[in-house]
Image 1 (tube, rainbow, N blue to C red):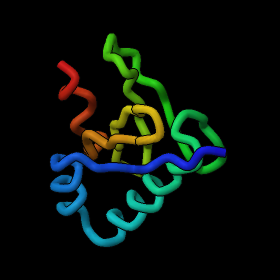
Image 2: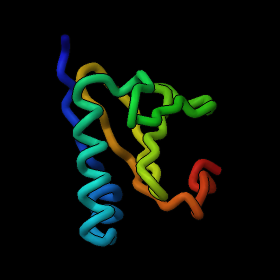
Image 3: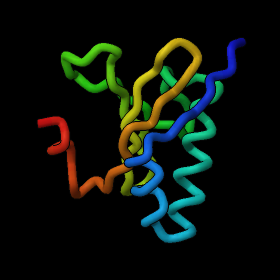
Length: 93
C-alpha cells in the first residue's frame, strides 16, 4: 500500500503554531494518520470531501474543534489550512 507524504503550507504551519500544546499534538497525530489513507473515513478519523468545484478536490479532516483542509496530488497530502470550527468555511468564498 502506498504511503502518502503529508506537507503543510506556510499558512497551515502558522495556524498550527497558534494552537495550545494539547490541541497541537492532537492535530499533528491526525495529520500523520493521513499518510495511510487520506480519502476514507474510518474509526477515529472523520474525513469528508468538500463540495467545491476545485481540482484537485478538497477534503476536510475534523480534529475536535479544528478542521484541516487539504488536497491530494499523486502521493502527497497538502494541508492548506487549519481552522477553528467557528471560522467555518468562509475562507472558501
